[in-house]
Image (cartoon, rainbow, N blue to C red; front, side):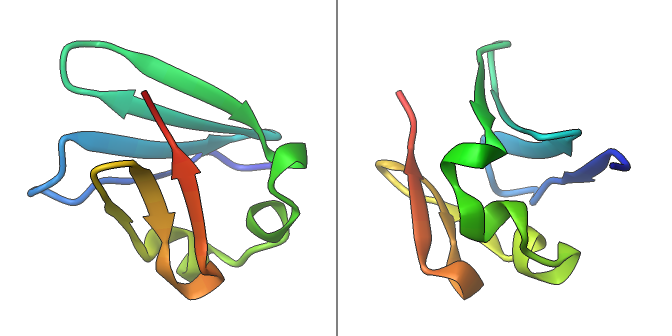
Length: 72
């Protein structure tokens, strides 16, 4: 699987897809890593679905998938 990265300027997070992993990188160097097996909708999502995300007070929300991933 190709490395796919998206970042929105107003965000404090960077979302990266690599192999079968979702990496969420935060300002200050903190990174949370999740296996895509935990999120089947995200694992099979198109690149278009994956880039439509926003940072919320609870985590990252993928709008087209109606999926929110809680982060700390």
